[in-house]
Amino acid sequence: MKRKINVIVICGGPSNERGISIKTGEYVLKSLPGKKYNPYLIEISEAGKWLLRGRREQLADSRSKTQALVPSQKQQFRNFDVAFIAMHGKFGEDGKIQALLELIGIPYTGSGVLASALGMSKIKTFEVVSKHGINTPRFIPLKSLISSKQQLSTLGKRIEREIGYPHVAKPNESGSSIGISIVHNRKELPLALKRAFKEDSQILIEEYIKGMELTCAIMGNSGQTPLLALPSVEIIPAGEFFDYDSKYFSPKTQEICPARISKKQTKQLQELSKKVHEILGCDGLSRSDFILTPRGQLYFLEINTIPGLTEASLSPKEAKVHGMTFGEFLDRQVQLALLKYKKCHGA
Image (cartoon, rainbow, N blue to C red):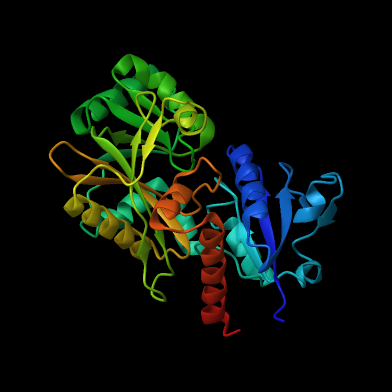
């Protein structure tokens, strides 16, 4: 009988999305098919400690039974076959945890170091994607907080000249819409800048594109496997946009899958999502967000190289409509990780 695959589900970490990451990790842990996998949970503390929580059946007994692991000690990881990355935000989606797992020598789910780093930087993603003929909002990158009235006045004039109102102020590297504001006039700008810079040292002022919010998940390894586009989701946020509260707490937010758009628009959205996945060199699962304008134009907003995988998350809803159980959805991601590792390392 073929032995089970030992999977470490890695979650937590120091980012502002730590709470969502832990929810993702625990949901993945209990949902990996038990006939095929032995799942373990590693929670990375806010201080950076790696805590092995034990096998799935032990978690219900006591979460206090932990073992500290040291990533530099490869022998501590020799019994694990693959890592399922359930981390969001900095250290999880930016290529750092991926680089660490490369050094340890463990296959891992999702994109590699470069694609993760590119996808985490909204500015770099826009710069790369726009060169391939994909519509993106106009934007102004900012690398330092605007403090003086003179600087603020100069920036305000530039924004009015190049982008106008309303516009969006957002951190360059942050997820779950944390630190994002829609700015309707110059009076709202200082607070929006402060909020965005609180989350990151680099931000962007982005053109506000009015229209339908859409997202589409892609599964597959760039240049290695066919890419599968899952059914798209139409998002109707509770507030002005799909912010943190709308995503995780508001009962008024609607997520309709498949999206109520034409077959032609659906195909265009799926093909653009595949194109972004390939342009950035993504592997495993990614999810790209778009706005469909009243005139029928699609504007790319950002890519998520580690989409949320909780019960309330978008990608699992897409997989379900496609016909996959959540266990099958997770299994496919693990298999893509092992396939990617085999190609890169000849194992």
